[in-house]
Image (cartoon, rainbow, N blue to C red; front, side):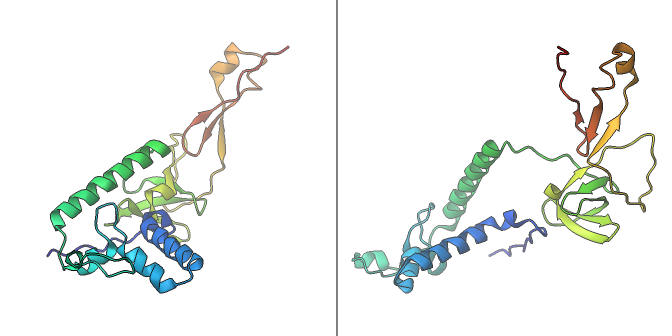
Length: 215
């Protein structure tokens, strides 16, 4: 039997531990609504899962006797086929991932390298990527208050500024929007150039107000 590696979730990223959180919520709701708590737990442990086995079978290799009458031969200990069980679990997780990505329109994040400047969303400050940890999508970020570990979802890349040189040891808080003056628009439009200015957000997206009719 091979050893499994302990994978720790990133700080402030409870979504990666959603299976345990959902299980705790299910047990709490069941205990609040039931009159006999022990019978409720017994029913929960003997109910088959999507893979065809109950939690008791996966833990002890046999079914438990409940208040419902069952044939004695169904209580004979029998270990589940581990290979088929893992295959069903992988197929189920793959389908769940497809449904989640389709519903939330998930897209892969852009790659980050060491010494890249990023914007930490929860702390609202700049940082520099120092290293990538062994945990999935987890990085060590250096900020003005020290080193922190965050998931890839917690930060975004900062656009490089060719006119401004920022040292790695200097951390400055950038505003939400940075105005950019466009000379070509001023030459082509005399009156509307002052009203329609372009802005670049922290994520690098160019934003401009819509054109309106001057009636």
